[in-house]
Length: 104
Ligand code: HEC
Image (cartoon, rainbow, N blue to C red; front, side):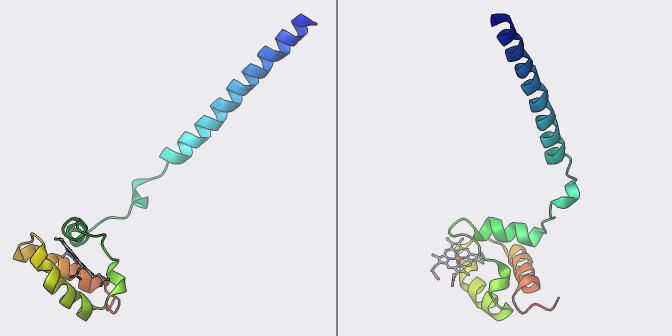
């Protein structure tokens, strides 16, 4: 009786180990099997926008304002931000391309 119990215990342990192995293997292949092309590429304008405009408050999605609104917003926000003329142009370009009324 005791012997039978021991055997069944160890075989169920083995069973579990094999099952775990299968589950873990499936999980890791599905997680790491994804290709890099799934990750969206960020543009320089988007990067600068998040970097320069995101440290006082969260950034708003470009789509929620029109081009005209972004122009007047950035007009005051650029004064608070450490951006040079070139970066201003890149950020503004990015916002114009992704604004609510952008022509895309
Ligand atoms: C030095 C801190 C600081 C930085 C950097 C900054 N902001 Fe702001 N921003 C504020 C503050 C404070 C307010 C709220 C007061 C106001 O409206 O003037 C604000 C408000 C805003 C609003 C208005 C939110 C609304 O719902 O109307 C927008 C949009 C915005 N910022 C965008 C930007 C953009 C784009 C940049 C980058 C060019 C930027 N901010 C950089 C401090 C900052």
